[in-house]
Amino acid sequence: MQQRLGTTDRADRFYDDQVLDHLNDRMREFVGRQEMFFLATADRHGECDSTFRAGPPGFLQVLDERTLAYPEYRGNGVMASIGNLSENPHLGILMIDFTRDRIGLHVNGRARVVMDDEMRERHPYLPVDPIPGRRAQLWVEVTVEETYIHCAKHIPHLQKVPRQAAGSRAWGTDDAKRKGGDFFGAAAEADSRRKAAADRPAGTAAEPAATPVTPAPAEPPATPEVRQVRKEVEREVERVLARAERSAPASEGGGFRGWFG
Image (cartoon, rainbow, N blue to C red; front, side, top):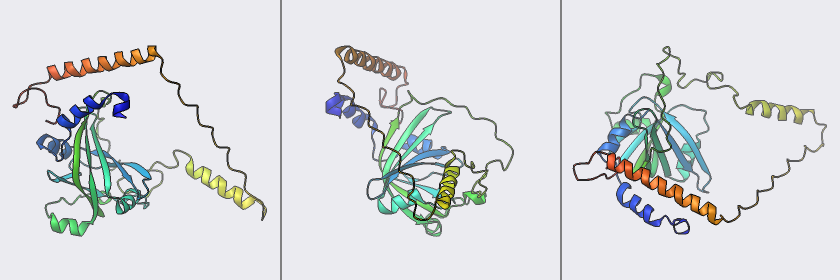
């Protein structure tokens, strides 16, 4: 795709300047104050899952420059991510700071699942969380293979609201309402299907499945005018990035080398 779209040179510069095989000092500091991250896993067939993890600052532990670990709290019992990792250890973590630096950090690596008692025996300094719903049942230990920036240009700048009354966040709860109830109506649909099945006379076939949606026709080749607009947009993006590089303070080693250089 780089060759087809003509981005190989830009991609090579990104690999050379931004992609590391470890967490440098600035990355470790960044990880240590994050309160959430997005997690991507896949099973042995390549079927993907993405999810969200959150906790107090430091819940994602930096064990050393090539190792991270995060706790798995009590959840819905599906164990989608842990199940995937038991079949396929590759994972991707994306941390985004929406409020302070408005920047992101990707970490790709290989994971293994470790029970809490084993993890604490190997790392006795790990904190014991006082909130029952945040006490780890097990840990995911990540061997870092790739780290790189997620640039700021499309990250919204959000603002934290004042902390609400104590106990307002229901860590580990089984209260369906406090977990969000049937917000998307999935349970209501499932209940409707069960009732319809129970009301059908014995031997009656279920209603036929919905007709598959016909895929949209392939997009026609871009016209010369569209290609020209795309080139102008790309040039403008390059100009914006160049201005950002010029305005960034020089590092000890010279000019701008990236946010996590």
